[in-house]
Image (cartoon, rainbow over the protein chains, first blue to last red):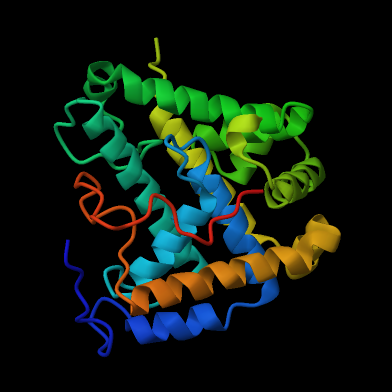
Length: 196
Length: 85
């Protein structure tokens, strides 16, 4: 598919130019680069077909540089790249399902899915199974940390920090400490998530 | 009885965890990587450089925009710079 390059030299009302994005990527600090790898590993975990974090990050950079993904104003570059990688992984899952002959009747919002339509989940048990496996991976990652598991459960249920503390009887200090451990675990994760 | 929506839960969780990674402070990032920090940064830098070169030379990525189209002819299965850790 031919890629649009119309944004390479001109800002659009929706976002910055590809050249702006290229400059921002070029200027990423070493710590941002490490964060970028951790983000790529997070989004690519469990992808089938040997498509790994480096593939996802490579693809994201190409799409941003060629202008097919526009960097919106007001969005930090890392958050933008994270969103592009998420989208790429969603595309990949969709493609895999397509190749497996599964009918996808409407746009899938995410491999993890943000659909709340129960009918959708009933009609595609494979997608549900993939999500269950994804959840299991994340729970396994924090298996030795009871407080982190409570937080994970709360986040999965869409709770904010205050509500998590309240619902799971966690002090603010314990919450902050556990979140720090969780961040370190995510940043430290160098291996393939599927090996967890 | 409340239905369980694993896809929704996973989406929320991944979004929250990705925000955690972005929010980690610099010292935290350095400490968690330890001696591997410099090599990690270099590895990603090289990957970006390769992606930039591929984009300039017109090498397309492994997925098309629809996510459902075929892999383009001549495109390697995986970028040559690919490294797994």
